[in-house]
Image (cartoon, rainbow, N blue to C red; front, side):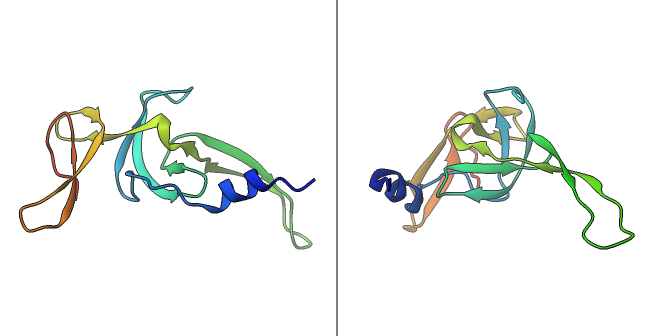
Length: 118
């Protein structure tokens, strides 16, 4: 049966404060403590893909004759609530606050250190 709630939820993107290129630290799960750069954000699913974290192996069948199959390792996505933006200079993970600068532009900064991200 068609579920209206599920289809609506899947189509609306969630506003995320983590962006592509941010350095993040995993704060929960089996990869806890690892840091890496965000390769891709998935706002519809509220997930992020972090470089070198949550690696999965996948077996690929040969597509042409004479070609051999192979094993590919790639990053799987993590839920955005399981990562925090990481300050490389102060070596601390922190939440992000969005504030309006004096010139009227919105900027992001770390709450713990006050360091500007953008």
